[in-house]
Amino acid sequence: MWLLYLPLAIPALAAAAARPLAAWLEPKPAAWLLTITAVALAMCSSVALALLAAYAAARVPVLATLGDYSQRIVRRADPISLPAGFFAGIALIAALVAVAVLFSNRARALAASYRRAARLHDDHGVVVVSGPGIEAYALPGRPGRIVVSCELLDRLGANGRVALIAHEQAHLSGRHHLFVAAARLAAAANPMLIPLARAVEYTVERWADEHAAHVTGDRGLVAETIGQVALLASARPARLPSMSLGAAGSTSRRLSLALAGPVPRRVAALLTAQPRRRVAVFAVCLVLVAVAGVAALDTAGNLHALLEVAQAGQ
Amino acid sequence: MHEPGAAEWQGSPPGAVRRAAGSLEAEILGILRSATKPLSPGEVREQITAGQSGDLSYSTVVTIVSRLHDKGLLTRQRSGRGFIYTAVDEASVAAGRMSSALGSGVDHGAVLSRFVSGLSGRDARLLRRLLAEARDSAEQD
Image 1 (cartoon, chains in turn cyan, orange):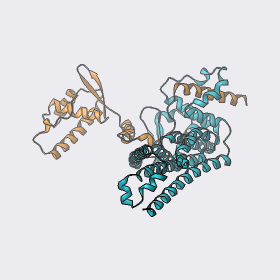
Image 2 (cartoon, one colour):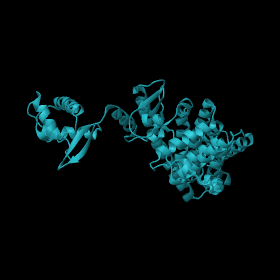
Image 3 (cartoon, chains in turn blue, cyan):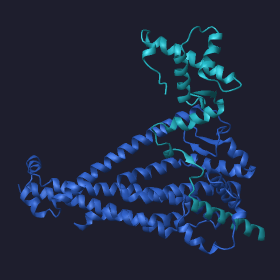
Image 4 (cartoon, chains in turn red, orange):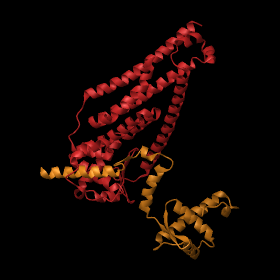
């Protein structure tokens, strides 16, 4: 019966592994792997919750009469306490509600984005807006648009602009918003998967960064552009990087990156060698997901068998 | 402050009111766009009355001007006890709409892929150091 708790425990493991995986793996396969893992684990844990609740519900006398099975047999076999089943039921309902709410929000946001994108006048997919501020984003649509503020374009060199546009183009052509949405939905169903959703957001950024590096042929340029834009966009008055440079402090770089936000990690990743494909890591992840799935299915089979026995014993 | 009040419009059919308000909005916006300096509602009213629109009440002008301000079409600054208004330039209205169209009640961060997310102070320091190191090693090559 402990098997039933496995689909609930594996997400914790996946959550702990998500950030290192996002850092080690090649971004594109990592985005796929993490998204699929998140969705599969969310489904498994929801099934597990449903089964826990179902085991408890099977002991309710009214249902036994309706389903025409022996309550005595179910009670004797049933390893799950009523409170556990009750809480599982509550958790399942909460998960379903959270997923439904998030799904409708996302769908509305996406529809708004499509409408917006259709109304924008663009030049080869790029819309330049003259509003104040440093802003650049990709707006999904058919076709999607890249919106860049005039001020930002002015501050970037020709190469930096190419890197910026290539990055946003990768988001649109790779439909990265769908990866992020799927992972966030999974995290809504099971909050233990939130680190996985964050890792997916990070890997799609890395994916777009690597695409920009491929287009420009210069990883350093992309790193420089991301850093420059991030510093411009953050409200703090930016000192010139060369002026803030001290020889001291660079020893702690590894340590501080471990706690850093996504932007410095993206820049650091671009400044080091391109990540390699790691088949073994993929295999381990997929095995974990498979274990969660098998555990959920096995328990479902057990419940079914138990109810059949109980029906025969009626 | 001056919300569009139903009381002002009582007695006329709603459709007619909306049309009238719409064309008045456009006219007032036009006046403010062609103005060389920020105008108070009183000055706006004088310019309308100088045209053919006839006798508009001061409060109607204030209502419309503050509605335009709510829509993001005008900026205002305090002047004495009231406000004076300036028309926002049209391109930045478009840019503002772009974010507000997605922003009203919808999780727009959800669908937009921003080039960079926000930086904490710590991240900014780390980032400067990373970039400086990269430049240094590029110079040494």
